[in-house]
Length: 630
Image 1 (cartoon, one colour):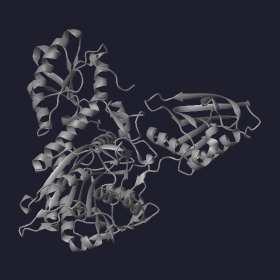
Image 2 (cartoon, helix red, strand yellow; image 1 turned 135 degrees about the vertical axis):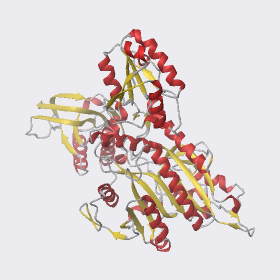
Image 3 (cartoon, helix red, strand yellow; image 1 turned 135 degrees about the horizontal axis):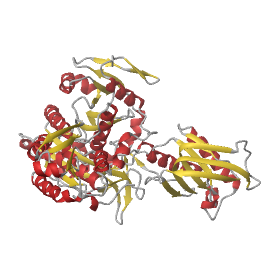
Image 4 (tube, helix red, strand yellow; image 1 turned 90 degrees about the horizontal axis):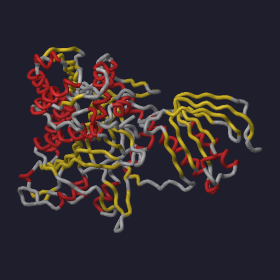
């Protein structure tokens, strides 16, 4: 089967006359549909071998593309001209009708153009990078993905849900048709939305979140049609932001005392310790057949760090010992319908720090330390703690009953009530896991910081330390991602900017991570040289500055800088060149302030103190820059 999918502002078609005797009956001669994905489709001879499998694959591909472009309105349009080997009309019509029914049952709004007719049609393509996509596939079943036993168990998992308040009291929650009962959420609306999302366990995305529009318009990140879904391309400004966040995490982990390592991205599927762990971790894996063996791509840094620790000589004096890696990349075969923008990916950059502890008590103390470290890290990115995030603790009932004061202490440190998911049995390798979640504009939640207490993997990997009595003993392990995936930090910052925009503020990124911090706008070409002098002086003070030397009007260049979210905009003419005083447009306040270079430098230093610095990721002169999007 061959399909051509056009993301369209509208499609309009008019039925003219029958093209074949098998044409289906239709009373509707004219139809116009707005804001839709038009799927031109041709069934081929080979599809007749297994129409059911072809239909399943067809539906899967349409859902995938619809998810990428962010629409739930589908128009199925039979278009035999896509193939030179068409299948029989009967098979083609059956596949189209069945696909219409299956998509309609999955919350898609589906229209189907009449089969077997000549039709006049008009379609207006949106023209973005994903607006025209084609697929070719046959009736063969998709390769069966590798799914861990833990992921299958997760589907059967029975959870009890609670709110743990600041006084350490548990309030059991009940859900009925999306409503949550058992706790007064009047002062915690975001927590309520988070609870609804978690208890419903619906992860599919049917609408494009706001950050996707921002990441494209700002020329940061985009989908890569030439790769597997969930793999992104990063333009220079996006790569710059990502690298700045990565460096911030690396520095924080070094300050914490973690030893940074580097490990392979692929591992032997038949390695006994690894294979056992695969089935205790709730994730789907990419698998590859190499010339020598079957391997899987890592979905976390655990494998490399645990195999390294296995070969180390570790004493009780070394504990807690901390190993750290920033994995570029980790891989998980997330469901296609869940993939969206920077929020959920198949290839992502994950900071992962494991602590090797002597016992549960040492692990609890270390979790409290890491809690504070992660808090400082999230604040440094530009998130308001704890206001911008919601706290979840997932715990076995036995561990909770034995450690109530510890769990309550985490919530007290957090500073507002938290969601508790409690299990009667231990399903996974950990007995406690906490997450800090960002709830976005679509009321979808995504975990950023997370830490776990692991009581299984020391034995699984034959890890241990030499205690005071000379005997080898097992560790209690901890799994910390201090920031969450780097892509999710970018997602949270962009979604936070959208929330600010909804409140009437100008959306912006924090100054420390803005690719351009200062934009100079010369009034005429005669002022460009002075702008270059100013830019050179600012660069010496670790300020990222560029110059809009294009031929647009001053007003247009100011608007362009606003569209790029530049924090400080300076128009430079004769008066500024003579006085050294600038009328600076400050994006954060929406005001103009008179200041000289020294004052401007000091303001930027205040906004960037303690954060890493990298130079401008693009040519200083805007006339030298290519256009990446549009």
